[in-house]
Length: 217
Length: 267
Ligand SMILES: [Zn+2]
Image (cartoon, rainbow over the protein chains, first blue to last red):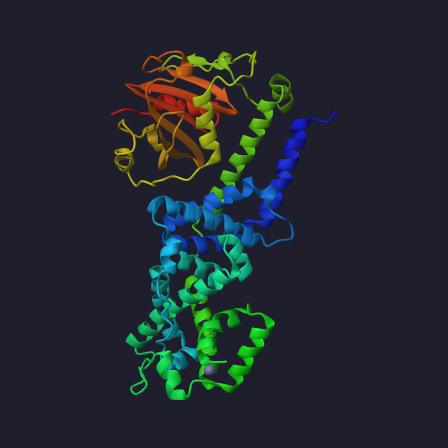
């Protein structure tokens, strides 16, 4: 006669083994994302634990053959957003961010050129701090996008699925988020003397630049 | 295509997320425009700077282990649930594990000489033990702590404006149990303080609430310990003044009863 308990244990064991094999290797990625989203080691630790617990409970909902890392990040991002929402309650952070002007412009050609070339190790280290500052300073929703796109390297489609928004929205918000970080980075590079402010051209708006150049290519 | 349009698309271009037609447009423009070539170079450099500056964090030392224990708890809990759903007596015998639910399982220990009474198999399976069940469920789920205190006083402070009674963490003899965290967690309709301890690497949860547990039929004499076995866990209860302390954990019954007995609770 089959023993139902033994059968149940066998199934539990198999599920656990499969989960350890498939999900546990993504722990570092989850932790990096959690640290950058929460900006706190303690909260990140909690968030990753919550994520893994949820993922294990809902493991049977994972579609085999799809991206496990994206699935885990979806669970984690939503857990984080829920926590954050609980804290700010009435304010809808996503909408307030869309209200901000996009701020197209203001990237000096000299800065672009200087930073487009390979940097030496010392300069890279100096800029690493500025990059973290820039990320930490972003509004919640934009920070999440940078984490998912540039740290976790999910596709726009995967990000859209995580956040439950259209791909076009991912593209435009990501553009805005990167723009803000790039501005911070360039300002910092100028302060550090890594990039020289171009005396004549200076940081010019795109409009000015185009006018000077004839505008089309 | 104008440079301005390139600026808008350079991110998606570097990400390889443009549709083929736009991709071609951008490439055609870039070939002819030095400024935009630099812009693409900058975008690539930016991307790698971001990635190398913000990744490469080391996992907290014991995180992997803690997650593993959380998953163990889920496994234990789901097995307990299966056992409870089925005809209990048969499978308790078949599985050879201690599992008993029901009023018949209440044992009373006189304090300080705790004697563990062996209980007969329960005549019924109905859950008459909601608070006990909830404490076991909370423990098994391994929900994260709200605070990780350096000192017990931080816990009292944390709960000060959250519950209507003073929370004094239980202190155990010989530092056998280390307070690792606390969480505000409702038990039934009451607000309760869940305290997390580490006992030789195993988790022990102590839930503090005020008033008496209705399922015990009346107040427990102070200094006595009452326990039940729920879902594979032993759950001792102790009263101190107006407060009730409910214990459970991933340790054997003897250890848990000893802890409940030796705990210094109250003010
Ligand atoms: Zn151009």
